[in-house]
Amino acid sequence: MWVYDVRSHILLFQELVSHGRGSGKTMATAFSNAAESNMTSLGLFRTGETYVGHNGYSLRLDGLERGVNDHARDRAIVIHGAPYVNAVTARANGYLGRSLGCPAVRPEIARKLIDTVKGGGLLFAYYPDQRWLKSSDLLN
Image 1: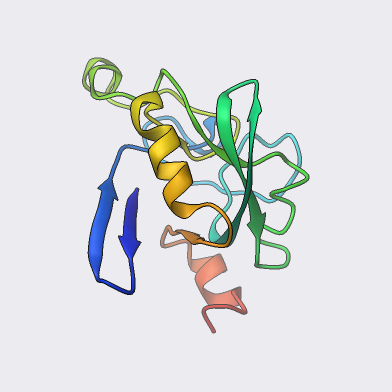
Image 2: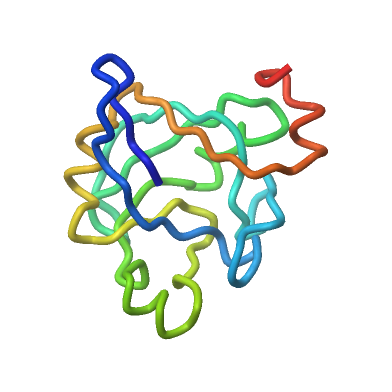
């Protein structure tokens, strides 16, 4: 995950981020907008409000692409910290632990990252999925 301040053109974060366990083992290659798919969604999201839940301090996301990620809030797709996101796990297993579809980050940076992007920031989840690239209203 890269977090940029587009006004100052400064890279603020360069971090590991997990993908949904339904999206693939070592690499995310399948994506969904469906409830209980445990898959990552592609496309553009707007960051919403913070809350404290099962995974601690978290940030709600609103998908901005109809049919692609617009069920993100209903699916509880949020940014949160997770102990399975770390370089040791990645080296040992060849991949990070996987979420239920959320972009999960290292717990040590979760609060600072979330506070940086909350309240209307934009998050773009990309993969060269040809079906999405051809059908996305946002990209086309």
